[in-house]
Every structure is written in structure tokens, then in C-alpha cells.
Image 1 (cartoon, rainbow, N blue to C red):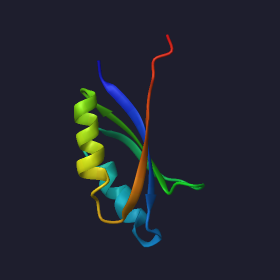
Image 2 (cartoon, rainbow, N blue to C red; image 1 turned 45 degrees about the vertical axis):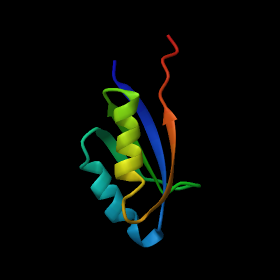
Image 3 (cartoon, helix red, strand yellow; image 1 turned 90 degrees about the vertical axis):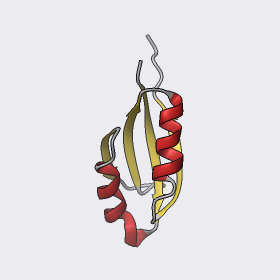
Image 4 (tube, rainbow, N blue to C red; image 1 turned 180 degrees about the horizontal axis):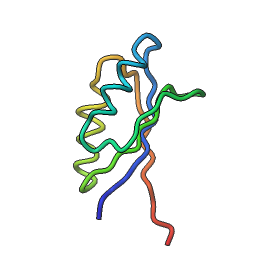
Length: 79
């Protein structure tokens, strides 16, 4: 079963468009958008397992130039 999460992203203001465009093209990213509020962007991501999800977030998104920090919200099945 795939693991899904919303990744809330804080970015430097002059990098938001560039970061969102790059994240949108990443494997496993379903959607990515710039947003208003306490975060600058949000990405809906999917991975085969929690290890792959962690690698995507820690190695790729958090290390991207322009990203300040992230908060990950795992999708849970309530059924």
C-alpha cells in the first residue's frame, strides 16, 4: 500500500516560484502549489513505503536551494 503525505514548505520569498516548479516535476509528487498563510507551499506526495517517503523529503525537498524547512503530514486511513 502506498504512503501519502502533505508536505508543508517554508521558502525564501525570492525562490518560491522556482522551488514549486522543481518540486512539481519530482517523481512521486502528485501536486505542488504556492499557498498563502504560515507556509509558502504545499506538496501532495506518494511513495511506496515510509522509507522512500523519508528519502524524498529529507534528501530532495529539504536540501533544495530556497527551502527553509518542511512539515510533513501523513495521510491516515480512517476507514
